[in-house]
Amino acid sequence: MFAFISEVVQNKPIFKYFLSVPILGLLISGLLIWSPLEKGSNLREMSEYINQNSLDGDIIYHATATSLLPMSLYTQQHRHYLLDADLPPGFLIGELQTAYKLTKLPLEQISHNRAWVIWARDSALPTSVHERMEKITEGSALLSTIPYWQAAPIEIYLIPK
Image (cartoon, rainbow, N blue to C red; front, top):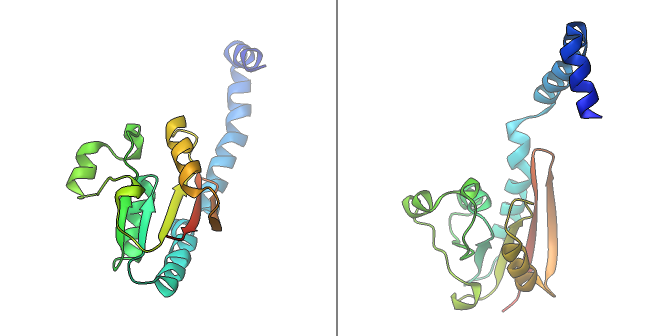
């Protein structure tokens, strides 16, 4: 199908302009609808929920630094930890993790009361990360799923000690 469209566009330049108008329209409407404030609002609301409902000794445990960095701004009084896994560079390269002083540890090695687990279910994460996160969250309460059309949905779990 795509090969046919590509061939038509190459052989008939008028189609190039004909197809570019709807594509350009979709891009512009997507930019007009999207708001950067909207991306963080649900995360901010859940951060406030965590702040209001946390107990002494609670920690926040993240599958990726892409949730840890913004959430740590909203929940500064909590200790944040990052899953000890090798992630693709798009999830914050090791040098930046070191520069931001992110602590990577297995959840089992962290002394804590309860763990608020933040899992961005990104399809680009290695299978091993999804398997570890499934094991960590097994049997725990899913508190919220924050959907983003421009990013992976973020799931928030509460794991009792």
